[in-house]
Length: 432
Image (tube, rainbow, N blue to C red):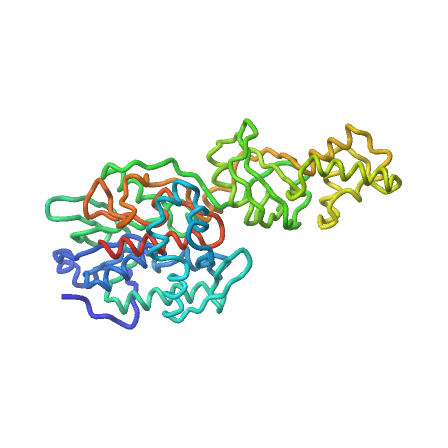
């Protein structure tokens, strides 16, 4: 019999309670493992179809990563759509996500939450946040929908073992066991371990024959040892392009988004977007700055020569973009080994070329990010060609569904990872 909806799912330290033995013997239709964005959405959608659903969450409360996202404000999704949206995940991942994103695009996700009493508003970089600026409102709405759907939430119920036999899936937790016709794994990756992320879902997927693409921290600040970077702590740059470059100097990813200098290196949307590429290069990466990305290098040199002919007595600093903070302009001169008292007329060709290089392609070695403890998502995970993109069902084990950060999917900062989690979780719930 379908469980009666309650006003709100109530976490229990003992998921089986006094009737543990009876529940051990009872079968359910779907067990969802993981109470994050993907798991909550999957459980809601599956229960709305009349499926008997149990959601297992290892923490005392679900949705912890949602609660702390966006500085406690929760950048829920983006305003981008269609091919532009898909392109944000890269060619291969975007193509695989196409069905999930087009069947549940950001507009649909916004309507979903606004119908649940969480109005959203657009902010810079095409981000959408709750009008209330409270991530907790997002979690509360999901828990209300979960209760209304009739799904059962069991907290402090970490999955210990997962197996399959002719009768379905066997799910053993620290407080008892369940049998289910279908299992949805939405266990996340390795990022933000303080939220309980341990990557345990990878081992279960391997046990069913799945390939796990190597995992790396992504969307994390970059650790930079260069003294001039750390000396600029607190400065934010806009309109400057940075690129992750490999050992041969080839750009693997470019970003023109805000850049924050910190006491540890570089943070903000642009550097954090590069973190996955930096980590994949395993110590061979550098970050290149272009402080005037809209002006080609050859044109900039001609402009400087013209300025020297017309205004030879001016200081060299006048050549640098006025929009750059003074400390950044002084740093560029120092890196180019040019005294700040030098005039345009006195700027020799070698010095001019050094300054051009500093403005258009200043490179700094970056061995790694600040790691999983600071990473918003995990790059890598279950190989996408082993999962049906239209249903999220494993191609290797019928009845097993995989969604969210567990998959080899990651996008840039801006709500793209929550969008992918909700969209893939929805498909898993609709088909489990």
